Image 1: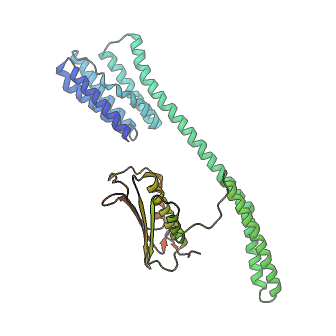
Image 2 (image 1 turned 120 degrees about the vertical axis):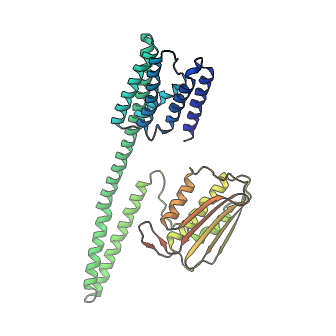
Image 3 (image 1 turned 180 degrees about the horizontal axis):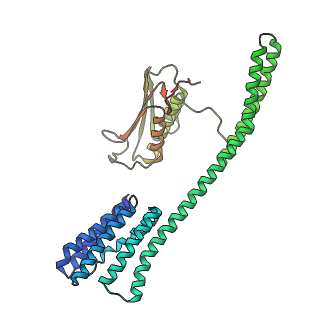
Length: 369
């Protein structure tokens, strides 16, 4: 993370400044190496907290033991960044790692106080700083774990409630529909009038099931009315050109088969909509956006291109819009390319198979309405 590199830069700068101001030049190379090792260990404090503590404080222990033996070297002030390591140890390490790492830190504190004799208040303060860092990491970890546990429990209760509602309402109606359909098929040849009556019962049960389903969807979407209208697809993509005057939007559609799977058609529309939204929000000095859809019997390609100002070659990929587009394309077995255009602006190119492959390997082939 960028914050890690900033922290590393501060630690290295402090080490270099201390090396330049150090009076005992004999120990200068060793002191500089120790400071740099401590600084570099900060980069692995999240992924390998115990290893970072062992390397950093193990190096400090060796250095302080050498100081005790030689008795002619001063201590290091640039290693103050090591205070971050006890926090990381208790924030991201396991219980055994935390105990082992704390033992290493306590050993170093004892050795360094022998190398640099201090008064009792100074010794207490030294232990207090490192123990406070460890306690802070443990506290934040506890609160984060508690919050995650509460969220998981709430989600579990929601799933249980939903499962119970589906079982008690929709499941009941669907079971009745299946039984009535079996009875209707059994009497259709001998008693057509009775079969017609059975169809009426099925219709009534299906209507009740649909009403119950709408109620459940409404409960799940608290704060807004459930959207039960048909989802927009490729035929509605030309409406995007009329949605705004600035920037100007051009839509070109050609070569498409007569029928597309609903999942493919809907995905193309949503991706074009998201790409257009990104162009409006993030592109600089954009005046025109072109949306081109070209297809054949096997695949469909969607290209959205804007004429905004030139952008960096490696923009931050943290936006949820691009992540959502990639997930949607991946589920349908397609490919997505997004990046700066050859001259300027941003280009999103999506290719989807007409008979889209779902995530489970099945074929998505239902036609659009």
